[in-house]
Image (cartoon, rainbow, N blue to C red):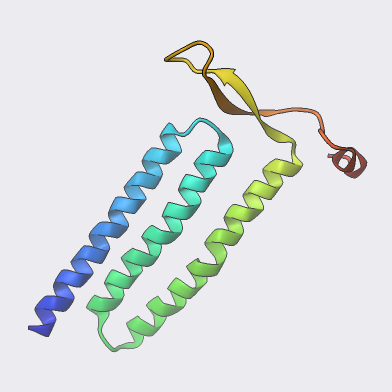
Length: 130
């Protein structure tokens, strides 16, 4: 009975992880600018990976594989958000800004943000030389 319950729970976690990975990939294709795409990829990647590995942990049982999977989860938990933050900060320092452009489909006056490079906008950025 417990094996059946663990099997269903791990299957559910694996399915949810795959679902979040798929939604992240769709968000990567559908969102209009760099920052939105990066957010979709970063958040769903972290959550999906943790769910998939948690499903594998339930299947692994009490073994060395469980310990290794727990270390991988811990590593992903800290490094994935840090990498997303580093990418966003790098894009910000390279003057990747959001600008308003008309939407391709829909009313002509509805703005949609699009990432575009521009000159530094603040005195601090101008002093840094970025």
